[in-house]
Length: 219
Image 1 (cartoon, rainbow, N blue to C red):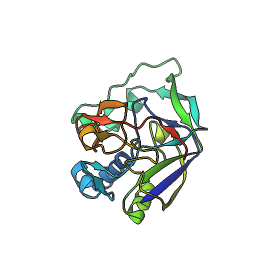
Image 2 (cartoon, rainbow, N blue to C red):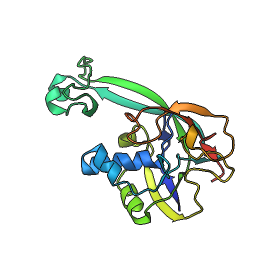
Image 3 (cartoon, one colour):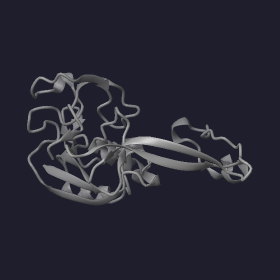
Image 4 (tube, one colour):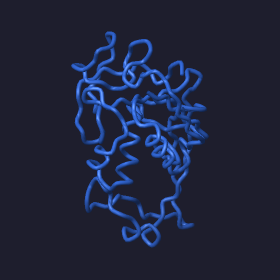
C-alpha cells in the first residue's frame, strides 16, 4: 500500500468533472509505451478491488486553491500548419484536426485562452500496487492534466512511501475514487454520479458510482 506525492512546479489544469485517478494516468502512459489500450490494461501495476483498480483520485491539500492560467498561441497558415505536417486525430481515424489558416498581416493569428487550474505545491495519490513499476512509469510524464505539454501541471519530483491502504476508501470512510454503487462497502455516500470508473475512461462507459466528496483533503 502506497502514498504517492507529486510535487508540482506549475498549476494543474483539470476539467470540473475530471478525477485524475492514478489508474487513468498509468493507463495513458502504458498505452503510449505499448501501443495499445488492451496491452496497457494487461500491464497495469495495480491491484483490483472488485471491478476498479486500487488507485485513488488525485487529492490536493486544503491550502490549495483555484487560479486562472493564461495561454497564448499562434494559429498559422497552410504553408507551415498543413495536414502534411500533422498526424491524424487518433480517436477519429483518418480525419484531421481542424484548424484555421487565416492570417493577420504579419502572418500569425494569435489566440489567447485562460484555464481554471489548481495552484498547489503537490498532489497525492493512494494506491495498492507494485512500488518499482509505478515509480518507473511516473518518471516518464513531464506534467499532469490539460496543456501539460505546454508547461501546465509540470512535475518536479515523485515520492513514493508506504501507507495504509486508502486507495479506494479514505480514512473517514468516504470514497477515494469513483466506485460502482453495488460494490461500495464504506459509509453512506451522498454523492452519486454516472461516470466511467475503469480505463480507458473515454470509452469504457458510464456506471452509477459513489464519488469522493472533494479534491481538497488533509494530505
